[in-house]
Length: 111
Length: 114
View 1 (cartoon, rainbow over the protein chains, first blue to last red):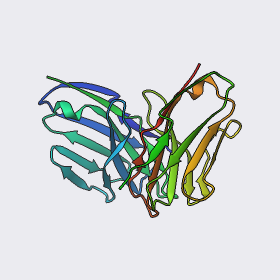
View 2 (view 1 turned 90 degrees about the vertical axis):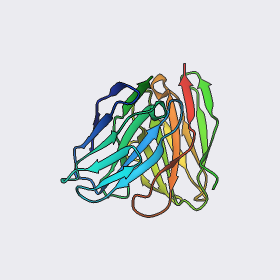
View 3 (view 1 turned 60 degrees about the horizontal axis):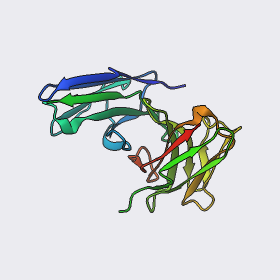
View 4 (view 1 turned 60 degrees about the vertical axis):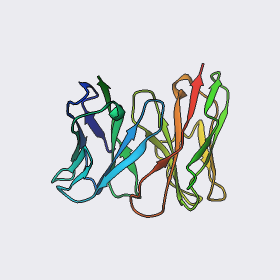
């Protein structure tokens, strides 16, 4: 079945440093979504990417969808303590809108 | 709009007991999902409903798990009998009908099986 892997599994940064998480799918995706889960919370939708090579920005967050539509990345510029949480990508193969979540990257930010 | 409602928030049971979780999706959302999230892992889809029909239950352990959405609105997920490895957070999510609209998650039910 479809597998979606993320690296790194965990990253600890100082506030103000940049952070990137990478998402790789075993199959071509029709679109990819990103979610953030705060400690003790539930996943919250951040963004969806649909087109090959698409880049979207939300303030300090930059999301990219690979040309082959099998990988994606999330980059946070100048992290803040409010960025703490686990970031999941979720890939949709286009079959009945079934999303497969990635393994997640847990971000810890300290002052 | 009101969010996805789930209950209970926490449940502790002994192995071999049964348990049920309830979910009420956002009004108007045709698709409802149950995910299992084991600590430190991503959510894993157990079952997906479109209105009151099952779209995907390929990863649902049908020997012990069952789910229903009889009137196409709220849903229940049952485990009988529970095993230790069922300890997880059970998340309900919903979205509008249509390709790949964002999922809206409830707060989840944290199940501990002892």
